[in-house]
Image 1 (cartoon, rainbow, N blue to C red):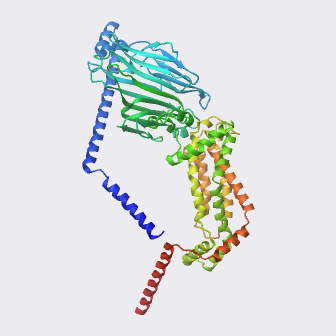
Image 2 (tube, helix red, strand yellow; image 1 turned 180 degrees about the horizontal axis):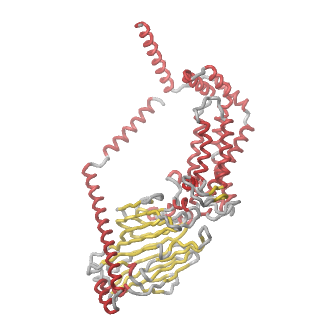
Image 3 (cartoon, one colour; image 1 turned 120 degrees about the vertical axis):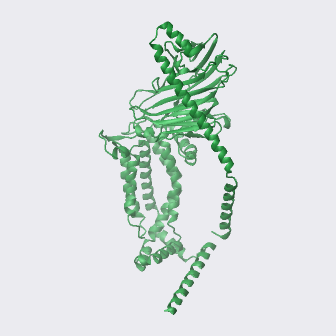
Length: 634
């Protein structure tokens, strides 16, 4: 690194520091932002407290009404709910909408979706795959009447109105004389999307004149659909997309709540492979999001949203939504944005977790295209993963070859390194030994780092694949060899007894692909350590550490999808074959002769190395003078 480069880095650092310093908010701006956040939190807290009080009051009123005679109850209902009193009683009925992909039930009580089943999928134990039913789903809008009564649509009875289209239904809430509120559902043919609109008529004077939005509470308990509760739970979360920004999510591993002041485009309740998404054409405002872990059998999390949506009291404009109830298939979700301007895209494919932006790009532009291409011709996913592994290893071949050549150079120089070790024995001569070894490598044209760098460059692809396989719904319930489902673990031995630490981190089973991967990695570690022994002294415990890593993989991957363990097993086997082939094809005698020839060539040193050597010489001269002066004093 020369002087100009050093100066360049210093200038870049100064510019970045100055930019950060001058663009930091002032104390007045920070205080204003704090007051703004506090006001939002206070409004939200007041709204929630008011809503809870209204719910308690409604429950008390309803309980007291149930014990009264009919005539008295009607009077009391009229006093409590006003024009909505007649809608507080009725008989619940379900309206079914269905196409080839999904079956929906819409309840007349609340006028909301109360059941959703995906026809093309089943659970891990071959039961119908139901996203939710009326026990799991709570959905309702809060309205304030002109007389300051608070009602929630989930407590009211709607009247179903069927039209000519069998997959369209209007749930009508009749209010007063000629006033009504319509919830219109239209299931798209051959699709997982449902258009959902809210239309009012004649509600002016019935609802509060200040009404310009409806408060929505949406709560859903997420069902367990896959084998292996722990791993599915780690991929179940509440996702949300900002209206003009990226997609975020709540924590998968702990209870979390979040208040969002910016407008949201959609909110999704997602398990490992399926999602319930509510998309607003006008955006959600002042949203409170909550995720809570559940311990009940068959359920993973309770997800809740409290938000507001625009509402036209005059009835001139509708409040429009779109439901997506379906699989989180990357290709399918991505298809909804084809031909759509970038600023209007839904970006539902971001429900598929593929790692950070850099690793996601590798999956999006490299792994998925190869996977989809092979999937057009191959129906056996075990064979497909094998070919995908070959394709990845082919791309990485130049790096693998360079890494092997680096280790081969170090290996053929081993006798000379051992001679240096004998020349400078003991810990007190460690510096001289290290300096002589590095000079040998430098003169011969070998470098220990040249073997590490190619391996480091492979890590992004490995991490991308680590994120890809657990999220690929194409592998769900696809069998290969002894694995019945490549998207989950392939247990060959299982037990029910809870064992502290073991059951928590390892699981109550042994996955065969994971076990084979571990055994092959231990064997490869020993083989690679013997082959790359350069004769240099290693740090104490380093050998044991190398064997410990594969054993750690056994605990890390035992509950992971069989496809992931199978990929790393095949990848390691291919690496062993490559290494043996290199060893057979490369003439190490010729390689050694080439390195010896390199020693005879004049060595070019950079300006930085020259200055470093001069500084070392000056330091040594200073030390010598100090030692001489000390001897004279004695």
